[in-house]
Image (cartoon, rainbow, N blue to C red):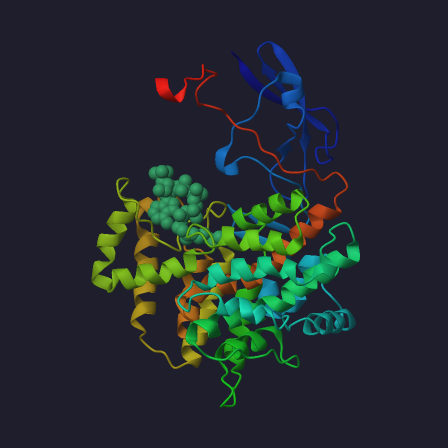
Amino acid sequence: MKLKAVCMDSSNSSNSTSSKIAHLVYNGKTVELPVLSGSEGPEVLNITNLYNELDVFTFDPGFTSTASCSSNITFIDGEKGRLLYRGYPIQDLAEYCDFLEVAYLLLYGELPNIQKKDMFIESISRHTLVHEQISNFYRGFRRDAHPMAIMVGVVGALSAFYHDSLDIHDEEQRKIASIRLIAKMPTMAAMAYKYSMGQPFIYPKNNLCYSSNLLRMMFAVPCEEYLINPVLVRAMDRILILHADHEQNASTSTVRLAGSSGANPFACIASGIAALWGPAHGGANEAVLNMLYEIGNVDRIPEFIKRAKDKNDNFRLMGFGHRVYKNYDPRATVLRHTCHEVLDELGIKNDPLLNLALELERIALQDEYFIEKKLYPNVDFYSGIIFKAMGIPTSMFTVLFAIARTVGWIAHWQEMISDPTQKIGRPRQLYCGKSEREFVSLQKR
Ligand code: CMC
């Protein structure tokens, strides 16, 4: 069997879609594969007709060479460490915007003017409360339940409460469901935390900004005045901005796949939360802290670096490496700075955990193994340390990531549903099981 692909430019313009054609020769038959060009990033071979024409599938577990969709939302250049939301560098958005401004940008494609921003904030504020009966859900969980387990359940259960925003073919209902999800996530997350602490739920206060509200609902108690710390609010807002979207990662792809079947938005976002929970994805910020506790002190770093490099040991340095970034994660650069701001504000000097983290970072960045494999600290490396300094328990780290990523999930879900060419996602497989065989009755086995 022969497989050969050649790419030819058949027009003067190298940029326009389908100006180039790749030819794939297989078993003596040639098929033309249009070459698609996006606005940034590598060209993409369109293989949608491959099976029809050649009777073969492509094999790409983990999607390392496969674009699952086209999208206008986020662009990552992993080699150069660039991340753009709707064309804007993440560093600028983190510096100059607040979270809801960035949410508006991701959802609608442009930064809002003052009037549009105010209207958006107003619509989010109107939906921060959850149906009172939802609090009964929490009481059904064990007090020691992981808050991500609670979030998967409660967010999925929203579809049992908001029947007027389940019709995915109605644009207005899709919009209301999106606003409801973004508005209610902090309320539901804070309720999960309060439930685990045995403290009363704190209702949202709509004159506060998104991040102040979140911190207040988590940390206020009815018997005391809660003082808002602007440095911590800004840090939380930055973390939310940096985590809001990251193109076709595992959880976003999960939301798209679930949504492609026509599932309702609350169910889709619940599926995203489930996918985010894994330690290779959103669960990594929690795993970073657990790893730092396990290492314990600076003297033991070499032992753990050795383990991370050992192929027979499944230990990995949590918070290092990324499927797409083969350079410093630009989000990590912003958070490294924020991390120091927060520690200064809280008067945390010589924090042993932060010292351990920074020493780990220094050693890993000089180590041949990490250099050769281009394993740099990722965003989770620093977010965990900031959350810990703020007094947020490790089990809540991924929940906060989920609050931020809800915006990205919804933007992708909306983009997919609005695409008239959208189809149900249905990958194929390379079957390696038994070929057809004769059935043997129970008595003869
Ligand atoms: N520590 C030690 N070795 C590593 C690490 C690490 N953290 N990450 C990758 N490697 C090695 C891996 O063993 C492999 O070596 P070899 O080529 O010899 O087999 C090589 O580097 C490539 O790794 P991979 O697993 O093929 O790469 P991937 O793209 O499938 O994995 C990753 C990406 C993020 C899952 C992985 O780097 C990892 O497990 N990191 C730790 C968990 C983590 O921090 N996750 C958060 C990701 S950022 C948040 C998000 O966007 O969700």
